Length: 309
Image (cartoon, rainbow, N blue to C red; front, side, top):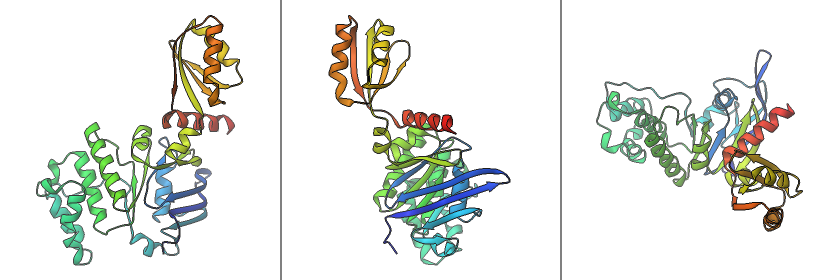
């Protein structure tokens, strides 16, 4: 059953609503035992893909496998090992967190009730489990939602925009929860438009735009794919920008009015660029290598994709 290193595999997956393609020929591979981000702007088709994986809507073309099992052919068998939150979880507000979980457990095997203390501990709610859910913050309700899906002891959790509406403290709590779940050997796939959160939480990511995956890999691979960058503070700045733009070692220069950012096609050219700036009479106050953020790569990739479309 575990012969594949991927818990989610899709090939040529396509979904149309009328004449509009919202998911286009998606080839997705989610590594087992990782936190995986499905990253894209609102309206990029992220939720539609998740709904197809869960069998909540059908694909027009392509194939899917969950945990090595073909979907929809063996959907019921696969979903027994999958937990998902597609929308904000809802609960009975007048009941406690523990009571809400007992209601869910009542529809399952008897041993599921015995798992309730374990899942409450896993999501950090043991100390608040006997308080009414209507007193919970949004972050606590999100964690209770994860506790609910953990009752089935899933190998794969699929979470759709789980940080929506959370305050900074709630986001930090949720980030820690995701990492704990991965440390237990589970796989967490989360869709999000929050680039910074995905970068801090996930091991790997697929960037989706207009229903298509435009980049996929580890966070480090996607950042490094943008090449090396340097920040330059120099005077006069317009002369420094012209000199850098004319260099074959520089593929792009941006200017925020006080500082230049150059993307290098040759990472080893930094000393030569510094020498040329100084010899041109330019006062270099700062020249510092920096790593591109996932946000910068996202904007580069999606804007390039837009121009090509």
